[in-house]
Image 1 (cartoon, helix red, strand yellow):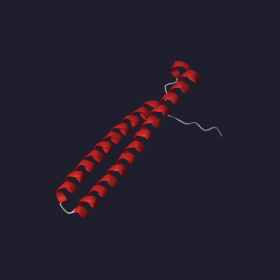
Image 2 (cartoon, rainbow, N blue to C red):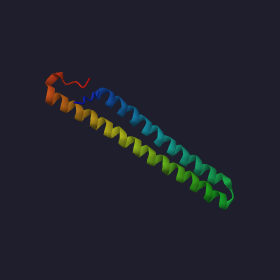
Image 3 (cartoon, rainbow, N blue to C red):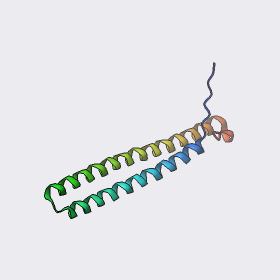
Image 4 (cartoon, rainbow, N blue to C red):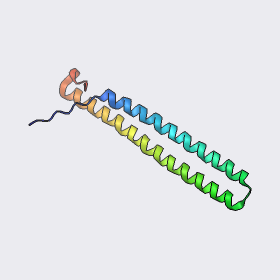
Length: 100
């Protein structure tokens, strides 16, 4: 039995845009966390606490930057899929191939 897959490239593009915005926001949060951690470490006064606060904030910010990169990669892949489906639809169906 044939299987039909209904792909709507505009929805993929919209999803890509939302993912890109999410990636940017996570990157902003990572920067804010790193800055807050540096400020807290500087204000701590205790040398052991300074190192701990700096390490924790740097680790958290690094994890968030990694998440941002992953979400940004998903956005890139969604947009690439959208373009690939549009190209395939157009080449196989002419101007009727709008993916929806």
